[in-house]
Image: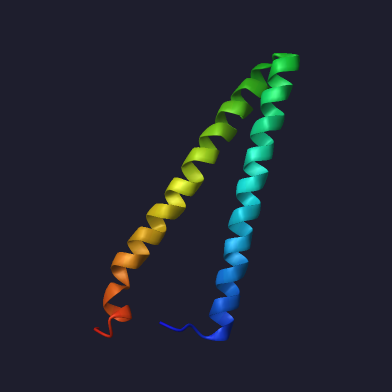
Length: 81
């Protein structure tokens, strides 16, 4: 199914934003892990754990949304309503 040009640009922007968010999430996990190692602070321990969980859950949720979108729009792609 061919998308209009504006939607195609929007899809590229959203994909790029997702990549940037994942890179930032990975960097934050690394920074919080180092800060926790050197400072042994309760805040950095909690921040490291939260960031590590976010690295796991954000892609999982995005994948689930894409799967649901594929199931819901399957009839439109096949030409059925």
